[in-house]
Image (tube, rainbow, N blue to C red):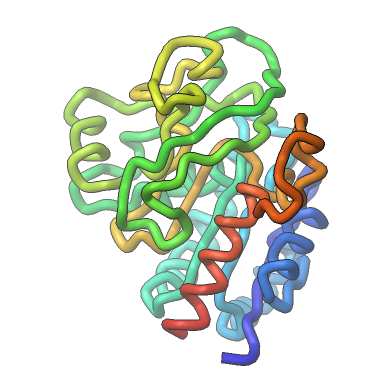
Length: 260
């Protein structure tokens, strides 16, 4: 396949759209930044794309709750068309605020066994904005964005990143059905309390995928580690190393090339 198109959604307060577009382009996509109002006016533009990305930032100032207002727009005006988009075998990625939007709109975990209001993302246990690098251990083999055996290291920055579930039954369903895409771990792959799990997320959840494995949401920022020199200890890394963040975008490109 010679042409792969990606759409990066913008709204007031989103501030990671340019970096995300660039990461898609490095992976081989022809990417475009589109304001949500444009998409609402012309929903058919999704048909021309193979991946839809909800980037990080503070959509609508995170008024009410992080991602809540944009999630309402998605839920009431774009939910069905995005469902069709995924149903056609295409991809959706939500990063940080975008992950919050996917969860609060019901697009994640999007499982028949889990109600759309049974999972949410709320304030960190330590009530402050937290900015650091974290290790992520894949928790499923079904998500097309990730390498199941590869632990990755990414930067994160949020004040409302704690994944919570309605009850133990919901958490068990997430675990059993392979919805947990990533967990926070230490450098040896072990889970733990703060600062290993920086926000207190249940079961150390850092990312979720849907039942198809074609929708991924995660709190850390893969678009902020797409070049070796962005690593905090980049001078100690091999020159030919692939930045961990690019694995997300490269896997998306490989999937599109082989399946769409």
